Length: 266
Image (cartoon, rainbow, N blue to C red; front, side):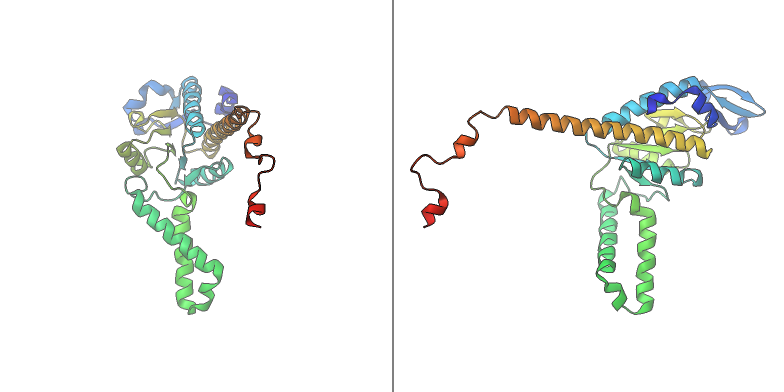
């Protein structure tokens, strides 16, 4: 759980290591503890607090029934983004962010529909009946589209939030989210602009262990939100049953001597 992430875990994962001093963004000054050997050291006390706030927000989004997209296309993030998003049944983008993913959602949906139709054709064996060259071309197209859209293939609406690894690299995703009003949770390293992010989490966005730790914490928050949503739905269903009148079933019982529909037909 996100609450269990301590300073010790963050230190062990190298979350405190920022970029070289020369590469810093001055807007990150308040999140920097010191510098060592030309490297900025991130204030992990703030990281713990802000990670908690980010997880609380993501939990609320999931509990409200809205979708969340995990975004991270850099090599250090690709596996963790995919693995943790799948674990909590969230959507993900771990390859290049396609322009219009949020701002031109209708067009993206048409590409997803096209991919689904191609996969249906393949499943039915249609591709096997095509000339080899044409079939190979479609196979490559399916693979290409799945790399770009596989993680959002079942998404049918604008998400309730984005979780981003490296807001500087994923600036296109940040820009689109800002334009359509989708809140952003992001790991912000010392070269990032935290002002663009609704829920910044200061930390190392280059170390695989650090990225995996953050992704796991956010995935746990999503799962907690979904569990709460499920529990609420179950509670409401039980309350609805309890509100039914005690003679609810009797309403549907035929009065004595009254023919049933089957008897009426006879």
